[in-house]
Image (cartoon, rainbow, N blue to C red):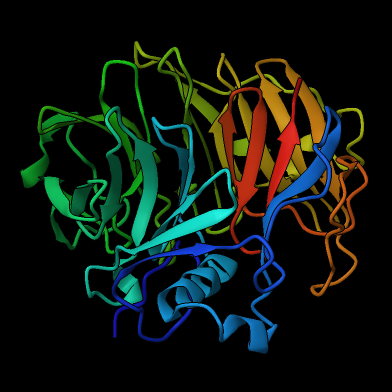
Length: 365
């Protein structure tokens, strides 16, 4: 059995194959918060309870599987051109304003080793993701097509890659690429363990490759999911496996310039030294910076990061794994329940999903 490094665990078991719709409001404890949150607050936008066995039995099996998958692991998040939230978690989940969820199985009948990595929305309702060596386009009807494919997954980490080459001639590592975002010119940004690629018209351009360490184990890798802002600047972070920190934050400008953003040592509301914080997720801020979900041993934060500036917009100090997030809005800087793993920015607010039994929204204006 191959061991795939650098990927988060997913649940085991057989995934249901179907397209299902379930209205969550009032079902299995599901629904939205009771009040609309304001700037500086956080609130549940959707909620469910997979531990309520009796209630879950009333739901279609594929919806139950989708919610379990989302509670365990999410691998992409984006708003579609229709303004509705999508989250990738073995299923492509669509969250509607009336608190309904559509769950489409996108496993392709493959094992969890072939989970979908990343999620990018396209005009017209299609979405792009990476799975195995392929870049896939998912249509609204749940069907997909391969739009690009790497060669076999047999490249050793640290092997030098060409500056540019047809995608079909480039071998991926056994981690498989992760779709991190799309630039304004339509080029896709993909991460393959130690290499950051740009893909357009079937051709890869190397944006960044980390130097080989010479160690038997991978000692320095890129984070799985980066961010691309509206200027086309790519944000990523490097560091030890599963432990990329803000100290390893880097930007790659459209002209190819690689920089390390200047960060202050401290930020208001953050008790730890910034460069020591581990980066879990990045998303663009609709301008020239990113929002980062970061962690310390005792706390987690959402930070607004711009060159030379860092501001905390949310903080959580989880009291336990069984913490119950209140139904009413709470102070975003004083949360006692964990912040969902993945972030996306849309129309003046942040939305977080994955690894919890709720979707969280944080208004920014």
